[in-house]
Image (tube, rainbow, N blue to C red):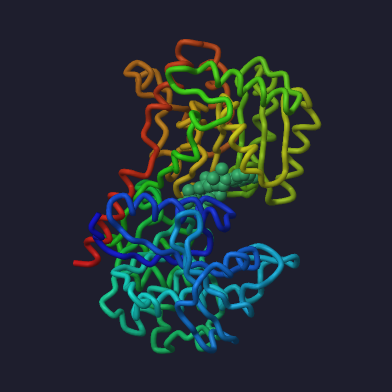
Length: 476
Ligand code: ADP
Ligand code: GLC
């Protein structure tokens, strides 16, 4: 196939190398989806300690002396079919811990660590590697936010830039005094440019300098322009209105498909789902006469997990059950654990991160609960659709874009794919769970919603085409 263009993607996470959330899934899935329609994408990531093992099979393609306190090199190679560029800068990334934090909390120098990634991304975009020159720089979230800024301030070399917002809650804040250290021009420190409430924000820097801005669902693109969701950046985003668009995430249907599970099933042959359910109940010693709900999530305020203790007892009394897999805020971990202690036959909680268990849960669960306060896109409700694990979601962000509420009208026309509630509070969530109990009890209606859900396209095809059109525009 003829190459339509080349894109350098700059990000802090990418499946299968390193993941803390959906950002990694998206950064990892896009290159393959775009390759199918002729785009050549390489992903630049920091060589965290956990990624050092890949370096020995890679080739050095770039040397960057004196990168924020030490020399660095960029190593290129293939990992699981992906063309990866790893920024090997041991003074910044070779540390015990996760991408953003170590044993003592967030790394003190995160602003520099990700400014360094962005700096090298901008340089490679501008100058190209030997034999590979990108047309477009695609920066993801605050970690890559300075990349379009460095590109603009240092000369774009004809390269277009796009910044994708995966989550506005993380803004990459740094004090104004860091300006020089972060290699940013002093004359750009004013409100319409780099200044952000007296300091700096790498996300804002990207928002004011990227040629285009995208976010991960159309609804979130609209929400971001309002104070309720914009978290201080609503004015900046609204001012760029014409350059802002929402492109819904997809799901890697090679990985997330009920047909690919050990006990396989499909919309036409649902017996396997019952077997998966029985296996999941057996694994956790649960006895659940009604719908078995699952939650697979970071346990944070964003995800509305604090609403569970208020609504789950009634749901349990109505015959429902719950399996929770997640980790995060210790208070929320304790809150879900106390539900498990109170209802040992109907609630099970696993604190931690477990990809294999998450698959067993989607295959065996009846419904997936996503009561988020805000949700740029959300992936778990889409896995739920694909698995006929009916999503029960709040009407925010990408959740509202992907799930159709089982209202009488939607049921009548055969469009309903889940249960959608609003506002995001215990009353509405509790009502949604009562709706789940009655819907589940009506076997014909339930089967219909499951079928509708499984028919929804959740793959990357449509969204990859939308990104391709955007890249095409930027090149023109
Ligand atoms: P976010 O990126 O805000 O965390 P998303 O719904 O976009 O939310 O993506 C979350 C991703 O992380 C999904 O792929 C989900 O299955 C996965 N995930 C979250 N928590 C866990 C966990 N404890 N174990 C396994 N997978 C998890
Ligand atoms: C963020 C958002 C989530 C989205 C993911 C991938 O982590 O919280 O809604 O699906 O990024 O874009």
